[in-house]
Image (cartoon, rainbow, N blue to C red):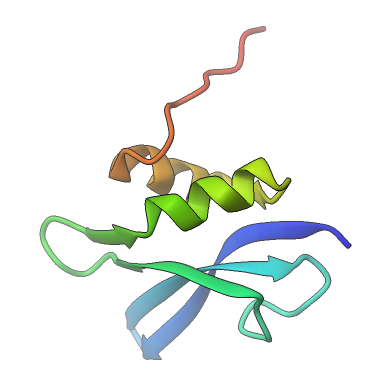
Length: 87
């Protein structure tokens, strides 16, 4: 089972609100998830990012792969450090 950390969308039309979840990669975007680790609200100024750092680091240590967007949010929230790819 491939486990990913990704966003699931909530909120109204043109007013998105996201949960950061750990889910099986085969499940649909807004489907069943294993664990809720945080929220992301892009409409506030500045963007509101709330992440449980302990849960996020535990899942990363256990092999969960964050998507590119979630990886960027983890860096912004100070949970992980950025790792730039070298050519």
